Image 1 (cartoon, one colour):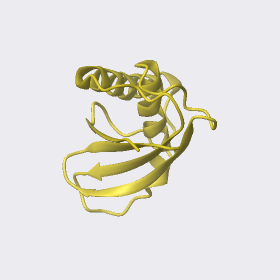
Image 2 (cartoon, helix red, strand yellow):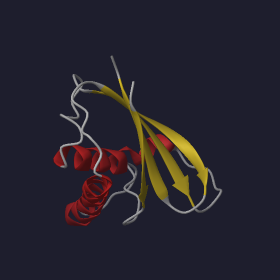
Image 3 (cartoon, one colour):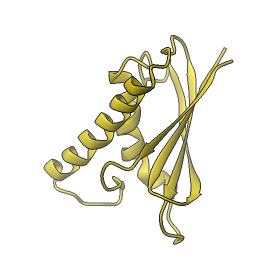
Image 4 (cartoon, helix red, strand yellow):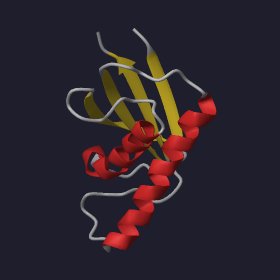
Length: 120
């Protein structure tokens, strides 16, 4: 069973499902997160997954205040789309991906840590 952990330093602001952003503003943020994930996975040169995977998404924030990690699903969705775009994942549909399960990572530099685990 293969496990890969990818750390994406925040390339832009978080995309929160409670925000009421103009669609063009949200599109710019989505593109930044998607491109960051795609570029990072290309730079690592890891072998792509060919089957089903499980994804954990750990959110690291620079402040210690309360927040709901699940509200950041648009950010995680953009990053996972970048992994698919890069060819690291076959697809992000229910047949290929279990999750992503959202978790608080801790207090530190703004980052999204994706742990991708191969399923049998």
